[in-house]
Length: 49
Image 1 (cartoon, helix red, strand yellow):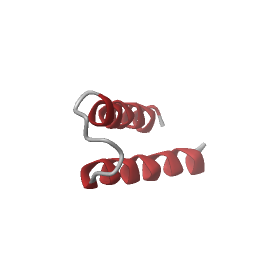
Image 2 (cartoon, one colour; image 1 turned 120 degrees about the vertical axis):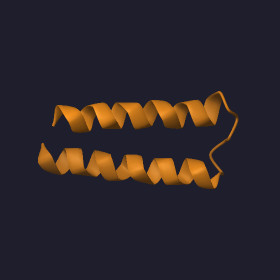
Image 3 (cartoon, helix red, strand yellow; image 1 turned 180 degrees about the vertical axis):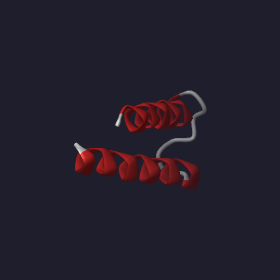
Image 4 (tube, helix red, strand yellow; image 1 turned 90 degrees about the horizontal axis):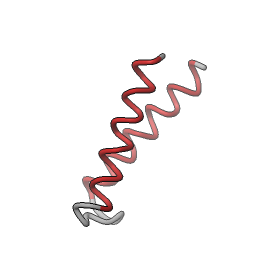
C-alpha cells in the first residue's frame, strides 16, 4: 500500500511539473496519459484501502 502511495505522489509531481514548469498545459496528449495513469493508481489505492 505504501508503494502505491509513493507511486501516486511521484506521478502527481511529474504531472504538475509537466503542466506548470514545462508549459505543456492540460490540453496535451502526454498530460492526458499521465492523468489517466494517476486516475488508475488512485482508484486502485481507494479499492485496496
